[in-house]
Length: 342
Image (cartoon, rainbow, N blue to C red):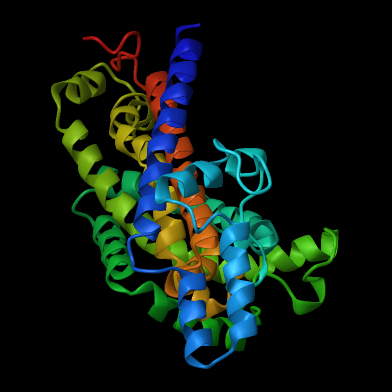
């Protein structure tokens, strides 16, 4: 029950934090002078296209861009009625993309779940690689196994993701027959889900999962090794060994459990950092994720589209942080969560 109360408390703080973040996001995307429609109006007037100017002015009124900034925010979030009543983020209306001339929900519809899929696969890859390599490297410290793991880790950290993507792009297709670019074969795009489409997606996931997850796995492996070595040098480990506890059981029961805390805490940062850090990789590999959409929206000052994508990344961060906090409470009884008051 105490854990449930703490989870509810964290959920409430998450909602409040998301509200503050939404204000910051809306303010930041409006910092550059003008917006997409204002820039379009200036171009149309310069070229004498008055009919298009009238259309752009109509769109400014249609989406409340002619109102003060604070009113625009409240209408965008759905706290205040706009030209069409209460129709904002809270009501499921994510706005209109002026760059693509389509609703934001249509543009990001497929990109959202593909982004989550790619980055969840990368997170699983990170933990599946970093955990065993970090533990083995610490248990076999200063042996060839440790040196080999360290070399792999440094190589992963030193190689830029976009360069690794280009290398795997070429050699993966040439020698292994892996598909080039995208997250599914072209014939499955826009088609309903089927077993053949799932197989195509899984095959296309191999390269981006490896590319996006490599640097994260390398960094996590090095941190886990360092934490494990620190724990293995403590007196309770010597006591456990002296009592005849098997090394594998001792590692899993004590040092690993303590050393693993930072990696549970990393869940909150891992997903959003991979989303933001995989933009260049997505462009290089032609992935239909949300990264290239955000890049284009920010370049063109498409405020509703960029605002929604940034809110999505913020939501991923807050959900990940909440999950990691709850898991830390379950993992380590030393962490106090009742009242948070000492």
